[in-house]
Image (cartoon, rainbow, N blue to C red; front, side):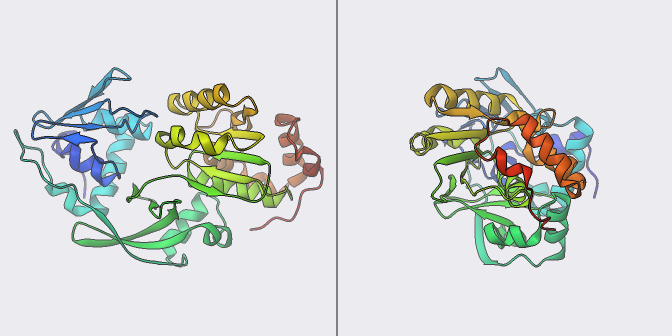
Length: 320
């Protein structure tokens, strides 16, 4: 299957946002309003004009077609988004039938129904984990293989559960979530809290934590910076907080907000300076993990004040 720009522009924006796990705060036949998927906010400011099939984010003063949204959401150029969209349309073939029409009648967005969950065994998911450099044994501690239904078809993905019982769903082709949406907190009895934006950033850090024999820290995974505000009461409970959020405008704003709110919070993103997020950096350095002493010195240089920095001098076993 192949798509071009005009094909993609015909896809209903409300349907596409629903396929990504976003539902409107309010809608009618003419428009739908969302908490912006592009940043953290508590008042819906992203509007979809359902008659013109266009969007506009009033908070960022940006908007356009589904192409513009895709480039902003995935942080990519047009060819990359078209390629990604091609894969997703192949995977979720029914989306290709949801074309926008003028004065489209109000209807229910497709719901994601969890059909089953089990240990991760599917070869395609194991291959995806390998590309993200996450060992299967570690992934199975924190994630599940989830079978879910979207529309009339069943699919499978790596599922990362939040504290409300919903799942973040990931594989090589999709990035979805089902309701209820929320944060994930792992309490280790530690006074140190480490805050991550997504599950693969968290899993990457767990590899490093085990690689270098660091004491386990409590970890909070936002699953979306949209949940930052409701996470602040949890964050305030910890006397030491380190933030590992994305190097994008939303991630920077969220980091600054926590630091302003909590005097003991600090920005840990210099750890992966130059990369989009922690996992992207981790994928680039993972082949060097066999030279553990060299990487340990690099981590010490970047985090001289870390409570666990002395442990980096004695890196543990490689867990692959």
